[in-house]
Length: 148
Image (cartoon, rainbow, N blue to C red):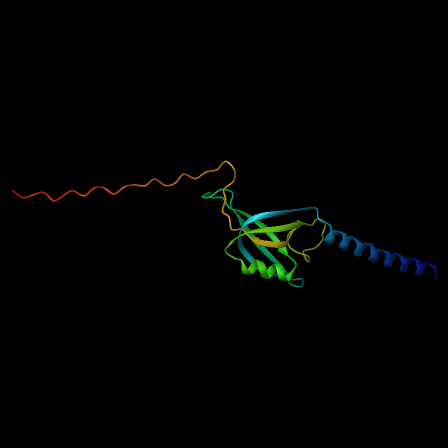
């Protein structure tokens, strides 16, 4: 009787501790921030636990060949719909980084997007300027030579 009671208390405590751990991991953010770029991909993935997974193409300088990708997960259906609506536009994603989630059932990445806004400015970073293209005047046309 005493062994049965102790094992029940142990398993209930284990379940409560596991639930508390997941609650802390899902509600506490290791970091948060924003990334700007163009949504390149958004898909609904997973065998059992389906999540929205996406890619944001980051371009550090106009005309640079190297494109960095920011992989992210979306848990909220409304945010996923908003991201889908702004595909192909320059956007800013607000994200929270969650650390310690043991399975990919919560998402394939550690970065969970919570908000998306459309960026209307294409401003360059401080210190970068673009020279306007030189205007080349058309060559003067010569009059046809008079025949003698």
